[in-house]
Amino acid sequence: MLEKTLRVSALYDFYQTLLTPKQQQYMTLYYLNDFSLGEIAEEFEVSRQAVYDNLKRAVVMLESFESKLGLLSKYQTRLKLFSELRSCLLDKDSSRLENIDHIMDKLENLD
Image (cartoon, one colour):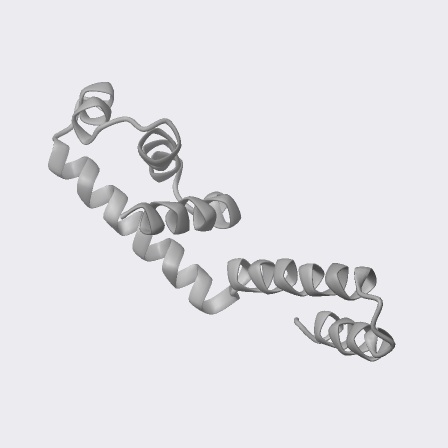
């Protein structure tokens, strides 16, 4: 459950502007401010089911954006490659220049 929440929060960071204003509000309250469905429903004077349905649609949309654009995936890949690059720079091995060149190629061709 925590892993899903972290993923949705990360997707929201990348794609929030593509959601409707109401979806943005619900997502912010639910995922970032830890409001319950009931608290959000009370705030907007709607049913808990309406909040749940709206959140569910928003998550489906975020996953759809990610499958088409891949911004989160590319970001995670960049972080991994930068970590590998940092390790190569700290390594005393003579083959590190080859490793650095290989990692730089991956970074350049990521998009």
